[in-house]
Image 1 (cartoon, one colour):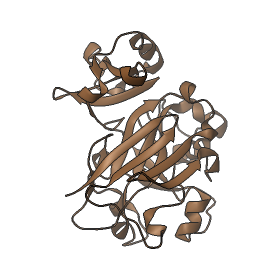
Image 2 (tube, one colour):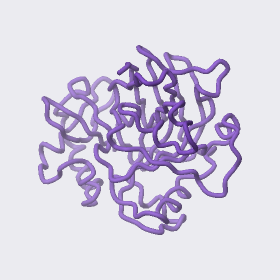
Image 3 (spheres, one colour):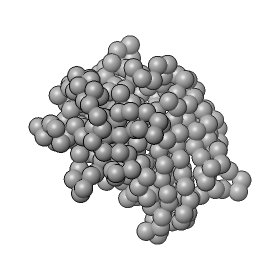
Image 4 (cartoon, one colour):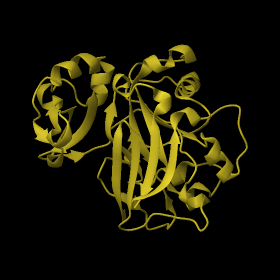
Length: 285
């Protein structure tokens, strides 16, 4: 099942993707169920599976071309990001292994949806790509044990943790370089685990103007999905709609010789099989 958030006729809503091939469209769940403010509230009510099953039997209200994609979760309580969580990326950054995950935060205001412009800020020419898998929390939990951690996940999505490298490296703290407006791509939708199958086989491919820049499978994560959930839930309570961005493989632009950064007109795609493709065109502003 695939869930997404969108705008249609200037109204924010959310829904379920139905159909296949050229007949893919969206059932507008928000229009039918105004008691839910957004997708996060469906998760909080534990209604994702039941409501999704009902809606998936209906015909689409809108085609994908008729909507404007929003970040999958438009107002998450928390966005927790894992840094240097693939060995190849750790090696290219020159960082040493750590006993615990490296976690930093991203703000909801920095996120963009599928097909929305990714903004290279005027203050920098070092906007880099980071293709990642995001997991969306579906249940409240604190001090979650690893063995049950995946039970707390509502679904998975594609993420581009766009990084303004010079601001990221002003100090040892990542926050400024990870939170410029319009730099965090999130979408196109949430896919539930029952459609994915083997999570370790999830494959990330990052393409810049059609050229493959990154490629890896989730089994290469240093700290797996379950470990990240267990660790993060130790220091904070995870709630429905929280997003954990799980790390990027090797091949980022800053580590290349010469470096490769994104600029006006570039097309960046994060392809996570079997979830889908997150696509954003770069602009300057």
